[in-house]
Image 1 (cartoon, rainbow, N blue to C red):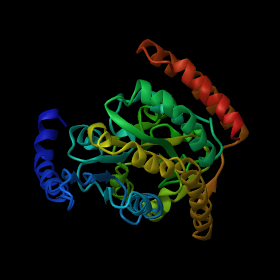
Image 2 (tube, rainbow, N blue to C red):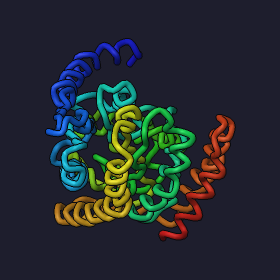
Image 3 (spheres, rainbow, N blue to C red):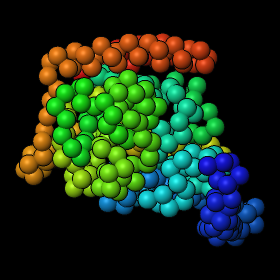
Length: 354
């Protein structure tokens, strides 16, 4: 979508948010003491409208974002309010980051892959076969966050960087070998897997996860590179016939705030918020791992084909994708970003949290 069209779409929401802000925070109380002291103004309330792509029933919304809003309101005694808008209510996924930068939304929670090429350092969680669990991936991501704040998310306040459970192949038709992927139409989670799917001989299709159910149901794609929690949270169990277990990658996620609005929050209340957010890596990692166990258990009960490539196919798979990591690191370095330093940090942290 071109910039002019994005701005035009966001203008009505911006007006609504501005009006809300004026009603909520424009009237600060003042009162004079009996002794004639000067008026003391009440601290201005800061309201964040949080836009995200997940449905309201998604476990991350139910167990993380809604409780975050409630806890922040309680611990700041109402000085900070977070209003959660699930299901892309304020902006579509590709527009969410710009919506937060412009102030249309105060916070965003989204996949950086929805803006391809814009946040290349974040893609490191997608490098194939780096992690064995979502908990491990999220703890590693926490160690990378300071570098991302410095080099990538400079026009917003990056609150949290992490990822989903680990990606497998979810397919509408069975395949039995790596060679069978040739010509198979696969939805890709982002630029890294555009490259991987192409190298494997598949056909890459880019579309939002919210459109994936219909695409699989109607045969627009033959499957997806996707984390198994989506079997439940995005109803993909209904359209998936085969799951090839691979633990390929974690889909990166970012949680961020409008920088100007964040700076209106007092340092004390910023600390309150960050103390809560800093529990996300462990909590979200464990939650996704639990969802995987639950989803895969149900898949077996429903008779889905749970498949593993042969040892020879996995050796071939590694032979194709492992050399690609150096190319991605080189691309980051060529763009003036510390790709090698970030990659080495991720590798060492992955050993620590294995």
